[in-house]
Structures are given as structure tokens and as C-alpha cells.
Amino acid sequence: MKKRTVSILIFLSLMLMLIPVKASNDSYDKNEVSSIYSSASINNLQTTSAILVEANTGQILFSKDENKQIPIASLTKIMSVYLVMEAISNGEITYETIVTASAKAHGVEGSSVYLNLGEEFTLREMLYAIEVRSANDATVAVAEAIAGSQGEFVNRMNQKATELGMLDTYYRDCTGLTDAGHYSTVKDLSIVTKALITQYPDIFQFSRTLEKDFRDKEHRDYQYMVNRNNLLNYYDGASGLKTGFTTAAGYCLVGTAQRGEISLITIVTGEPDNNHRVGEAAFLLDYGFSNFMYTQTEDDQKMVGSIEVRKGVDKSVETYAKGTLRFLMKKTDISRISKEIVYDMATLEAPVEKDTAIGKVIYSLDGEVLGEIEVFTVQGMERAGFWTLLWRSILSWFGIDWQK
Image (cartoon, one colour):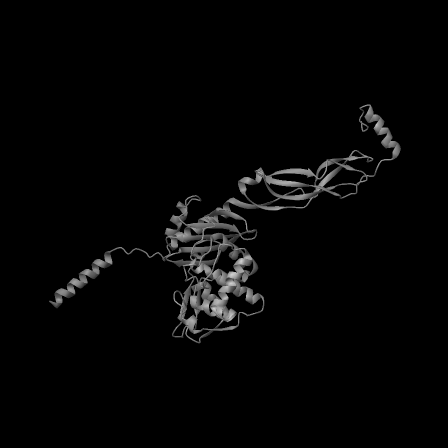
């Protein structure tokens, strides 16, 4: 009987080994990501909401439901890290400040580095844990070190959101574990992300790290941290920034990348799995780099026209433009930029001084004003004498142009 039971167990084990195992939603498969990327189109993305922003200008290049309030999971930590970097900048704390794990930090659930009660690490080590492992316990410990309690730190998060103009955001914790009543939008998330990476670019030393040891290898609680952001493995030029997942939020990603002078932020939320958030984020980044470029006006110091001068020794003065504008444009739109010279008045009256501001060059696309630069007089103009003006009046009475 025993032999028969053992035989059955061996048979069942072999059969189970032959059954294909479906990859988990968390898994990363470069080939699958490439397939998702290849089949994506700008108007048919699985993400529930998305945005693509140029970080230097804040210009939105693409969006899908940008103002939809959504649960944001660990994307919450972008604001948490922003406040940490701000505290460093203000001298409130340093990278070498020792952060001690409290009972609340030790007991936090979800992704962690398993901080023991009273365990101490530098802020630098904690930042690596937050960025690479997305450690909730490290986030709480740092929040308490800066603000005294997570509650006070969250108050600062909401205050900062208001200051930054994040009008559709409310934080209830510093980690993103809360779903109910804890929300943001991809537009608001792009605002805090832009603030973080432009004001505190040092964050990239943490966010682009692919792997990192936490604790000494000989320590019983040694952790080998691997970055959850697989965009770093897949996309050339990717530099961060944060992943997130809860059942309510789905798979989310804030991706950053730079090529040349263009720095992009892309955010996708509610994706069905990790491969989709990586593939569609990569697709949006390539859409931005492939379709947009900086261009600039070329009228600086060039003559743009002339304007009539009444009662001057000559009939008109030439004008020139002064200034240069730079635009981030869709490449196909650059040739369609129009310009119009608009003077403040139809004519001038002598005397006129050289370099007098008298108008502007207005640049537009499809009726929307892109920007303007000032127009000035090239030379001055003296007022004509009494007899000259009298003679011109006589000629004018007979319909004769005095300049002919």
C-alpha cells in the first residue's frame, strides 16, 4: 500500500511539473515588454490614466484622463522623498544623520527591509531602501525622523501639495498603503515629480540604482535589494523614478529619462501587470523623444520692417526685433509657426529716439500665441524745420509726395 501511495505521489509530482506555470503579474519578461511596446498606439493604451511631460518646461505632450482621481499606491513616496530632499537642502537633516526604527516603522506592513525595533541606519541608507526596495518601514522611519511622527509628516505632504498646485491630491499616509481617501491624478503626480527631479537631481543616484546591499552580508537580516523599476533595465536613458502597486491602484509607474536637452516624465496607472507598465511607459517616452524637439526664433537683431514718422526729416524709420524664444514643439508643427509684426501705433511723430520700443513680433500656431519679442527703432529721427514742414504741406495740398 505504501509503495502504491508513493508511486501515485511521484506520478502526480511529475504531472504537475509538466503543467505550464503562468508568470505572475509582478514578473518581468523583456520579450513580453517588447511585444507590448510594439503593439501599443498613442490612442489605444491599456493604462487607465497617463501623462507625458517635458520636465524642464512642464509642457504636457500627451495625456489620458489626466485629472482623474485615482489611488496611487507607492507613487505616494515621490512626495515623501521630495520632503526628505527639501529637508536636506534646508539643513534640517543630512545624508549621514542616523535614523532609528520606531515600533511603528518596525510594524508597518507591505514591502520592507524588515527594520528591527531600535535599529539604526543613515538617511542615505534609508533612501536607498525607499528608492530601490520601495520599503514602507524605511519611509515611515524617515518621516518620523524629519517631522516627529508620520501624522505630522503627512500634514506637511498635503501642505506641500497645495503649495505646488496639486489641487486633486490628498495623502493619508507617507507610503501609499491606504487606498480609501488617499488619491492623486497623473497631472498632480507629474507636478511633484518635476519639482523633485529639477530641484533635487541628486535623487537620481538613488532611483537609477539597480541593486544594493542593505546591512552587511554577514548580518542575519541581510537584504539584497533589486530595483522594482524594470524600465531601468529596458529603456536606454531611463533614470527612475518610482513603481507602485495595490489591488485598487493596479500596476503604476513614474518613469523618467533624458536624451539630449529633452527630459521626460511619463506616468502610467492601473496597468494589468508589470510588463504592461514598463512597455507602455517606454512607448510614451519614445513617442516624446521621436516627435518633439526644441526650436527657437531667429529674428533677434534683424530688421523686420519700417514705420512712418510724421514731421520727421525722413518719412519713416526701420525697425528691428530683439530677443529669442525657444519652444518645445511637435516636429511636424515647426514649419507652421506664423509671425506677425504689431506696432503700438500706426505712425510715430518726430523727434524719435534710436532704440525706442514700438511694438512686438508675435509667434503663433493655429491661432494660439506661442510668445512674443519686442520691436525697436533702428535709428533716431529729428523733427523737420518749420519751412520744410510748410513746403511739405503745400506739396501735399497739390497731391504731390514730397519724397518723390
